Length: 273
Image (cartoon, rainbow, N blue to C red; front, side, top):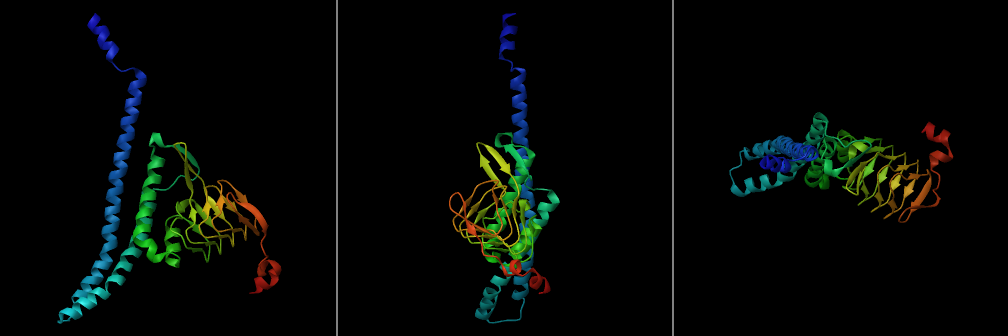
């Protein structure tokens, strides 16, 4: 009888059993997420390398007998081959994110300790972007090719959008209208971490918004048409910035009204043009 009571005392309670099952389930989700991420990225990189490898192989088969001439030709082919690889990597990565459904949740507050699927999907999406940023971002940053990749990766971008920063992330949570300019070193994303919780929200920049170099724009920010955010400024989360205004400082404060554009002064002439 005493032995039975001792055994019952050592047995885990119902609450402890549920906690163990929940922990085991979380570990299983993380393991599956890492395995699928490794598999998907392996396929992406393998396919991305293929065009560049074929380009180099084509050069290698040229009928050049002189050793140094062959070396020079292959060396000159490296940059075009790497460009093919980088472009393929961007497009394949964006396509894979769409096919797998790995996306940051649009508006969410997710405790990190739960290791839920939305959190893991955001993590895999972020890793995929980081790899593209490392291997292709420096080459294509500020070019229309980079904005093409961002659109393919989920961003809603208007015409003539110019982005000179590799710290603009969470593309699926970004909505930029026409003529938006993002300066160098700007940190802008749709997520933040607070007290062990991942928080996400879209960032919306209206037509003609300019974000100065080194500025930080947090989640949920909305800026009106023609708004100018100064260099090194800090825009707190969920801020609403007026159009045709200048904001500077840490945190930002409204400085003055921006000068009206030619289109604002003469809408008829703008429409005629």
